[in-house]
Length: 108
Length: 277
View 1 (cartoon, helix red, strand yellow):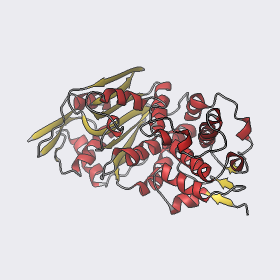
View 2 (spheres, helix red, strand yellow):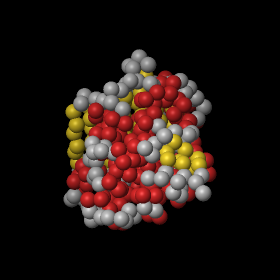
View 3 (spheres, rainbow over the protein chains, first blue to last red):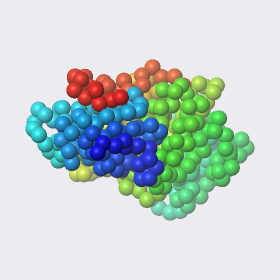
View 4 (tube, each protein chain N blue to C red):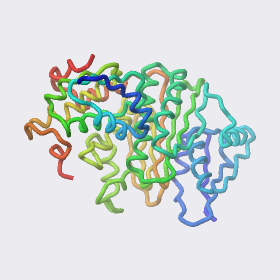
């Protein structure tokens, strides 16, 4: 059942670096949910990237397109769009149907 | 006994003095502030983080900076209309409440957009310390508004491994290559996480807005002064960790949203635009 994920509550409950909070949020989101960023303090690139990649490790891009992002600041909107773009749209050139973290890693 | 001396009346002079000295390995250490005539955020963070590492301090000869420093270090000087006094953030869990505290102050100092961007910048730089610097002490942050000079200065310092040395496969001979790589977009130490983009975005934001800034990180120096960028490698350790300083005006021409758009959203995003309410 679709629910509203209040990100500021997760941030309060699991404070830490942006990447840590992004992971906590990404683990709680399910397809169809609305992600509400009202009152969120953390707006780093790492937060946005980890949120998206954590969700995509468990779900598909089609699932991601069922989400709604609400009350994101203009900067956070750009960061999330870029994370999606980076993780999915750009990666389509190389890999189909699978959106986990490892598939998109350039060789280190 | 090893002595590091700070000398100067502004942050650029102080940092240039600092990087001209080799940081000592021997003990005990002394931080000599006797010639410091103004307590800038650079002085605050350096003094605070070395003090908790048991460095001995020689306070400024001049009465006014000596008083400021004593007040700031004791935590009794609370004037958020002008200063964010140096604060050690020792746990990642303290980042969100600290960010909130600073953001309220930034909103009184800067335009709404610049305050939001400065909040982002401090957030990214604090995150970096906990994600990459590998230090138990944490990070020290300070900021100050200069109404007469029409600018805000910020400084953030740690005693971690340094920017270049957070990469794998780095050594003394290729350190500068990795340092330069870390400053550029897509120059990441952890490709799967796109680590390092936060720092790159902050530096790009400062450069686009022609803000003065400097980084001392182990034996590497990045500076952007009067819109001229210089990256160099020293034969000695200029700072045993990473020290980042910047000065910004209250209103900025370029905001971070534009910087990020330029970084990566040149292509069509119509497929995901509808996700945002």
